[in-house]
Length: 89
Image (cartoon, rainbow, N blue to C red; front, side):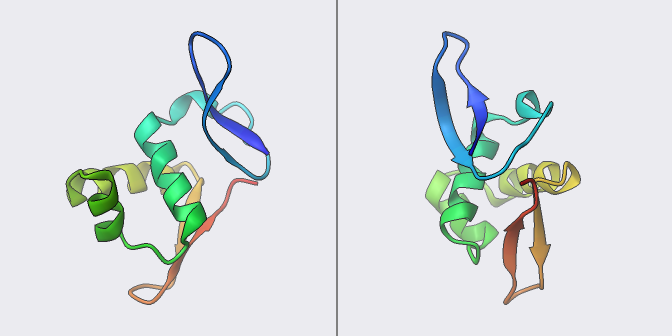
């Protein structure tokens, strides 16, 4: 398990994803961690469902997804009937 976010005041907060993500902990925002948690729970979750769950605009989700994919944290396998794959392990 790996800590994706550490609180400034100490201790662990946020989600934990299996595997090891070295040197990139600081590039994830709290919102991106929330998105990773949702994807971990349901790999077939859509951008629209993520937006509804987090109560933010789909365009904001798209920006977070772009960051997560460009940094190789996740990848989309397939299209409409596809699924998310967590890449960093």
